Length: 241
Image (cartoon, rainbow, N blue to C red; front, side):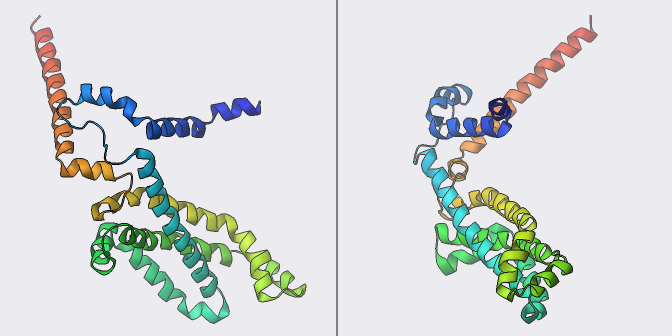
């Protein structure tokens, strides 16, 4: 029964399909050559797709870990008595970081840190802070007062109360913010290819630079045009019968 549930899981099949595309993209070369004869080469060949995936994963993991560490730490700080006066400032800074588009952050960061993965990681870090901070604050402040008082009555120090009571109870809400942040980072990391980072977006921007996307788009519209003309002729012929 458990095996049947696993086989019925969409996560399994989507994961397998992604793995096949990742490791055997070269097997689709004849298909791309047939579908888009004007595009050369039909598949990105400067680097392997597993290498692109690993680079993409490294950027997302590093920036997400930094955002989690800083975001949760700031949330803990502003929910303590000593840091409550800084809460509005922390929220404002995180909101500003989310307001700027990642492309704008990259444009500002490149002159300071150069091309490559560093400006990409900076953009992903700033863009991922807000959901983590907001959810961590909400989770910590959502711990019932009675639970805090009970922990204090048992003689828990402030650090032990945070570690053994508040963080475990707030963990589901914090995890939701981390989930949103990581998901945003996975999608946003593709634009890092515009500043020289190696990501899964590299083949996309390589196609843009080489005008391959324009060729593919033109072919798609040409096929659509032929289909519409054929449908129109059939409709006109049926009306005249």
